[in-house]
Image 1 (cartoon, rainbow, N blue to C red):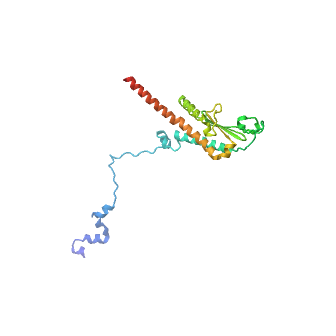
Image 2: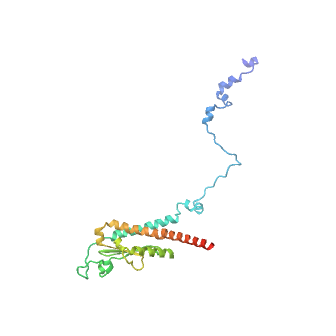
Image 3: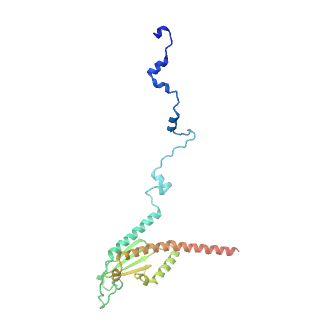
Length: 248
């Protein structure tokens, strides 16, 4: 009837019945929705930085070796080799320190360490040599009633050679205080220990082994790091004072 009468058609009624949600598209959203919505912040294309290309494992290892888990640092590798070296010595001492009382076969009513006399070959075991490198090694000689442990401390230069000789000589002169320390080391080594069956009877076996392993670790660090650093510092102070006196 509307078309026949020539009247204009009410478009609002058609929009409301056909697509009722179209009337809300032009309206702005409420303020509460603006606060809740988090729009992504993006820079213009001209200001954006180019994305970093992923590097391969070989490239990371060349640029920063510490980033590659396959590459070990020198200090970590050295610590691992020292731990393996000390663990091998500890296991060897635990297996070899099975001593018992045994009188001498040559002299009546004498009981002496067979590892020192070496009069009866049937009472001696095969010596064990444990080497970390050419300058650091340990020799374990075992008999039925005694065991002898000889150590060679690493000496990188002439300064460490002098410091190690003086330090270990100072300890050897006080061998009575250690009870198991030998006054004169075996030829080719820096210091030696002698443990008999009487020591194993009076002391705990695991405590003796811990003492020897700890002595090796402490003496190595003391000679190679602390004493060397102290002497280098004293040399620097002396040279500085000499330069100051010469310039006056």
